[in-house]
Image (cartoon, rainbow over all chains, first blue to last red; front, top):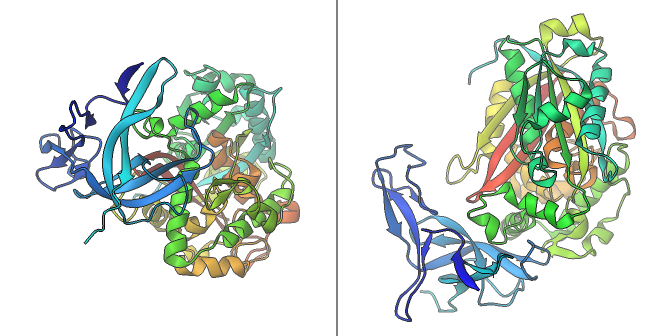
Amino acid sequence: MTDLPVKEGLFHIPESPDDKPYLIGSRCRVCGYTSFPKKEVCLKCRRNDTVEEITFSPYATLENFAVMQVGSPDFPTPYVIGYVRMKEGVVIFTPITGCEARDDALEVGEEMELTIEKIREDGQGNNLIGWKFKPTRRKTQ
Amino acid sequence: MNKLAREVTIIGVGMHKFGKFMDKGLKDLTRVAVWNAIDDAGIDANKIETAYFANVLAGLITGQECIRGHIFLRDAGFEGIPIVNVEGACASSSIALREAMIAVGSGLYDVALAVGAEKLYLDDTARSIQAMSTNTDIEFMGQLGFQFTGSYSMILRKYMKQYDWTQEQFAKVASKNKHNGSLNPMAQYQKPMSAEDILNSRVIAWPLTLYMCSTMADGAAAAIVCAKEVAHKISNRIPITIAASCLRSGKVTEEDDGQVRVAHDAYQMADLSPEDVEVAEVHDAMAPGEMFRVEKLGFCKAEEVGRLVDEEYFTLNGKLPVNTSGGLAARGHPIGATGLAQIAEVVWQMRGEAGPRQVPGRNSPYPKVGLTQNSGGYVEGSPATVSVTILKS
């Protein structure tokens, strides 16, 4: 099995235990518009000379989630998907891990943490690697 | 908002019934819908000067990726005229209608055909499901387990928490639409179903259960679009005016994913307000979706929707009948044909031809103002494309 990112350039895969994963996005120097995945052009200013690459904090808050009892091919059910709001403001679609696939296992607003792991097998002998978020279960202030 | 150079009308609509037709291909579905629309308008088909053909998945499902309209309309008798292929996921044929309106409204053509056709049932169900996952960014959400059922589940969860909408109300809406579908000979599902049975069916993604959700479907729908000043010369039909057909894509502001803005655009273009609408077909790939669509369209406030559902406000006998055809979950959702099927339903309602599901107008025998709302695809948290069309007689 070869590990294959769902797409190059979207995230950093840790290479050692001390190495932390992060998502890669972009921010407009003029208006502050933040984007994930990374863009070369600002969607607000519609300019191609104002955008710079940023890395996101690994912590986010759970915006919403759904427990899929019937889902995409190659995804064993039940599984959980959702949206997390990054500290930098952008809301990201994500698979959710680290909890039971039940509607009462998560709470909107709770703290989530990025993890980079296998999403599924791609049918050609590769492990597709992508981002997921898991609840931290830390008490937030 | 810029106006069209001249008034544009619909003089004919037609459908191929929605459902599962293993013995029929896109050529058959297209031909039947197109000729039903031509016969409905009662025009000489040679009057049609241009055609807009909407389809979403034929490329992935049948392999016919290129020149779909040129292939599928050829068997309906069309060559020589300009044919334009249109794709915008579930909103494709609303876009085809809009392009036909623009073509005629500009004065370039007098008569245009808009058609949407989709064939999703085949022996290989996995291929159909895989094909449908391309309605989002395949480098991104498409690979991570995104499904529209999950998207609707999340939106509904939010409204439940914020506005006390209940799963019982979702089942009521689904049951209402199943009833409407049972009165529609063009519908995929023509069996009424109680709210209780819907509520007790298998959970797909809570709060959604099986019978709240649309499934795969085959089908086609078409409309003949004609300049108002020409309509009476070629057709005996009372022309129905396209008062507005508006389109937006993606997020408009942080608060609005485009659905509110596109409705606003349409009311402005039509010079009408939400209160003027007497019948509406809205995009409910999962039937409870109707509840947030009516809010986005300005028919009522989010905090009122639950009560209005309980008061049967949106039923055939209600103050504002919604999804009289059965909506996407009951009439069926062959994605590229859905927008024009919504249009066909509203045209039938406005002409008084909707049979046992006919609704009355507020100050006239039949509705004078009808609206359709249609969304397609999903990109980074917003519908990829949103459309609102307003018809007026």
